[in-house]
Image 1 (cartoon, rainbow, N blue to C red):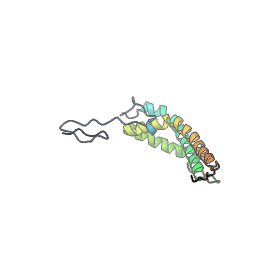
Image 2: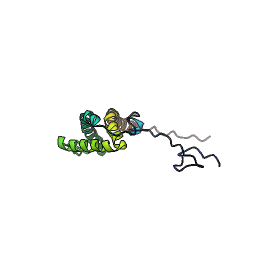
Image 3: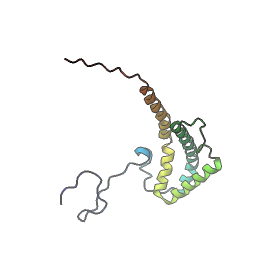
Image 4: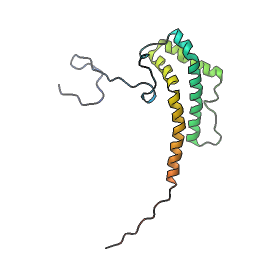
Length: 152
């Protein structure tokens, strides 16, 4: 059989052998996630330990989400869409994610990614508006006058 070109391998078996699938990066942009937690569901002890950090991370993510929307939309009214979630509503999200994490390894990994990714997300929210402002400022540069070409 001809050698398969580099790229995503087939999921089906090749000539009776199981195809090797590449290990995917975990979390947002490959960040966050915990290889030691990969493939495991949350224990009762982990649920209790993660409840408050998850609550805090979701609260921050909601605030950062609104800030990103405000920067993107340039709406001077700055409506609170996500950052006005109250403690009870955040608690519903927390309990749903934790219950799901006790049954599903992917959901458990999501919980860890939300908590671990909070630092990356806050840096992202701080950096992106400054990049946008830098580009807008650079566009204000006066254009160079065109030089007239002299015919020889």
